[in-house]
Image (cartoon, rainbow, N blue to C red; front, side):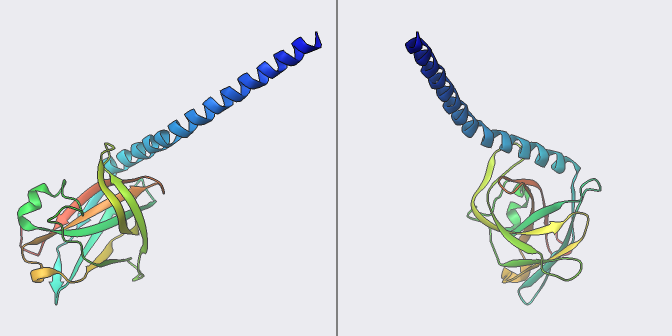
Length: 193
């Protein structure tokens, strides 16, 4: 009789261990997908509510400057920004050109806050669109900006005094793990359409 109880107890322990192992594997596989889906939903909500205002691209001595503002009165958090140049003939494709495209011109840039301080710089990877499609894979050095406040972007080594180029501004939301482009804008030299 004692042997039957011991055997039953061992079987119960074995079933529990197998169940916990299966649960652990399932959680390890599903948790990242669930976190991605939640971040994607948050990014989609932000994208539908955020307006990007961008001023003209001013260039002097190969140094470019523009002012942007990401506006959403219901959002008090931060966004991340990356900028790059494209040839003017690609402006109709501004929404699909990415920093790693062969025609993209990635230049050093800094972003200054309204108080004159340099914005915080960080590195993100694997930028997605709000539908979950990967737009960019690799490291991307971005700046953190506050919502509802104008910031100034300074770009170095601008080719041809900016003639023939547009600046693409990517507005990015990240939850620390997943990053989503929630909007983009572009601008050129004053008087260029």
